[in-house]
Each structure stands twice: as structure tokens, then as C-alpha cells.
Amino acid sequence: MTETSEQPYPAGVKLRDVPAGWEGILDPGERILWQGRPDQAFHLRLSQIPMTLFGLFFAGFALFWMVMAARRGGIFWMFGLIHFTAGLAIIFNATYWGTMKRRHTWYTLTDRRAFIATDLPVKGRSLASYAITPETRLTWREEIPGTVYFAREDRRGNKGRSYSVDIGFERIDDSGKVYGLMRKVQRSQAPEAEA
Image (cartoon, rainbow, N blue to C red; front, side, top):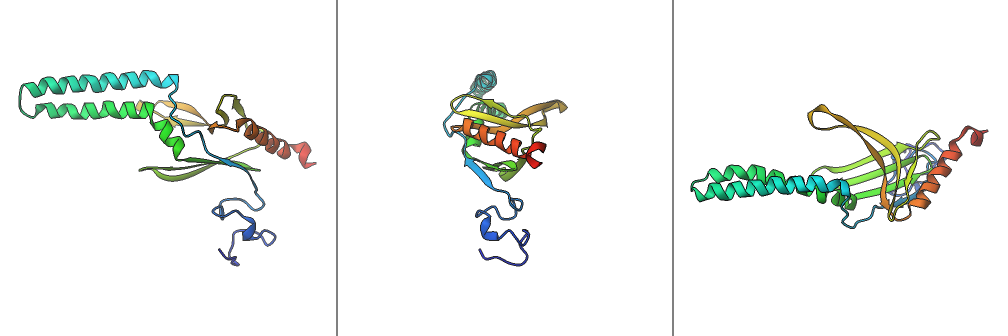
């Protein structure tokens, strides 16, 4: 890519100083400190087991109903397909959706922000950025692989209920290193560092 006079950076920052693919995304002078991806292995949390069991019961009951309705003849049994499919969707969402989402996610930490990029089937591409400031509450879950949370989002659930979700770099091998880098970013922005 060649430089043009219409580049979004001031005269001192040249386009070649910006990593490929990050043109127009990074602020002038913003540097990438770390990039990585979450663990790609299948993982099922304990909190997902109740929903999985509910999906199995829902799909199982629908299947039982379809078999019993098919014995009577006719096509009435087909109405059970809606419930059977819904049960399978519940099972998929509870067991595999998290793994699939991680397999289509990329993380980047700069000296100012944390980026989470996803490229999910049907949903497409998205890029979210979260400022890392001295006020950012960091939480490090020291597991293998570990997680570093740096934001919370309020979301709407069924029936208008809202709930909060922790946002962060989930299930990364070098979580301790990333947590340390984020603490350095916070310290570099503290008022004492500017004086």
C-alpha cells in the first residue's frame, strides 16, 4: 500500500509505521503490544450443564411425541419438528457455541486499548475496542488457560431482563504476561507518569 496525502495520520506518523490491516483503526502513535487467540479446544463449563440437560429433555420429549404421533398415521407428527429443532438448538448453544466463538476470535492489546475481533458464521465480522485507563478494573483468572477481564457490558435477555457480562481476553495461554502488560498501560497513563 502506498502513502497518500489523504492519510488519517499527522505529518510525523507515516503509513508504513502502522501495521498492515490496522490502517484507520489505530490512533496516531498507538502501538500494538500483544496479539493472540483464545484456546481452540472444546470446553464445557459447569454452568452450561443445566441448559444442556434442559435441551436434551426438550428434544427428547419432542422426539417421543413425534414417534407416538407418527404411529397414528398422517402428518401431524411433523409439528413436533419445531420443538425438536429448538431442543437441538439449545443443546448446541449450551455446549458448542462458546467453542465455536473462540475459534473465530482474535485479541489485540495496544498501549491504549484492547481489541476483540470476531468473524462468526451468519453474524459476520465485528471489531470492538475497550479503552485501558487507570480506572479500568482488571481481573485476572489465573487458570490454565487463563483469562483477563477488563470491561463489563449490560445486555438484554428474554422478557426484557438485563444482565451484566464480563468482557476480556478469555482462555489465553499467556494470561499472566497480558495482565502485566495491561497494568503497565495503566501505570503509564497515571497522573504521576505524565508529570
